[in-house]
Length: 386
Ligand code: GDP
Ligand code: MN
Image (cartoon, rainbow, N blue to C red; front, side):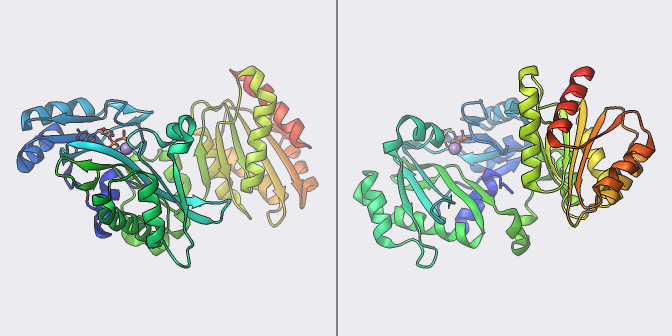
């Protein structure tokens, strides 16, 4: 779960990281009132869960409350990378003397958190990594000992940060690591961390991602989830305990198991890519899926208007294929899909499952014995309907 910038910065403050703290507005009038309250220059910032808002025109400085209203009106409703801006943060504006990057994430290969810093802050860190990899400083953190003083000194030195800022930088780096580990975050990032006109280090932007599997330990963070930014189908899936990620293709996929789901997506891509056809979604229905869950998953897949065919790939282990087949027929009668469906059943009671599908005699429902056959049929079906 990603926190918005204003939520991330509020969290940072709890860990002693200085950040401008404005207020959130949903209308231009609210933005005007907040700007009047703050007084002086403000910055209006789109609150959408993506980076690059500045480049997209979602960050604008305003000199007066009237100008704040005007800028907020321009930003609210604006699309940024397919997301619509519903809220803006109105912060007191800062003078920027220097932009630094500071982030902590998990390095899976190293099996440890890694602190990444760069004196080339402000822009996309991926771009810095690509164009100027030597400008990235990495410091691995032993989770038993935490971030050590000598490591912070080493980073500040490698960044050529003037000595007068080392103490403040230490407070921020320690605070960021404390925030990262206490929140079960997978990412805690400040970009840019600035030296402002008063020669102070301040977090101008913030991005915190919390590990979904640890959210139960953080009810205060979990309740900050912004349901308005989630695709409705993704929210519905989450509530039904189905992992669903919408993608751009035409073949809806229903699979049990995350690994098998990815393989299934790869296979549709393999046979479809020359024809411009690919997977419409990732969907893992989980183990022991019963009829109601199959119906729910089918409904979620079909809520995507791009879906031209559906590929169901079930490997029966604990999940019995005859159960899924029965669920499928039930779901079929309930949902009454018009798009063709290809179903591949393998494993426990696969034969019985296929017989149930065949006996149902539904013209748009085809059984396949192998994944290759299923993927080819799903591509052909999507092609026919395109
Ligand atoms: P992002 O583009 O989504 O990462 O949004 P940021 O919050 O990082 O803002 C993008 C850029 O806008 C920053 O790198 C700054 O250059 C600029 N910016 C943001 N806030 C201020 C501010 O208070 N004053 C000034 N002068 N520039 C700002
Ligand atoms: Mn930023």
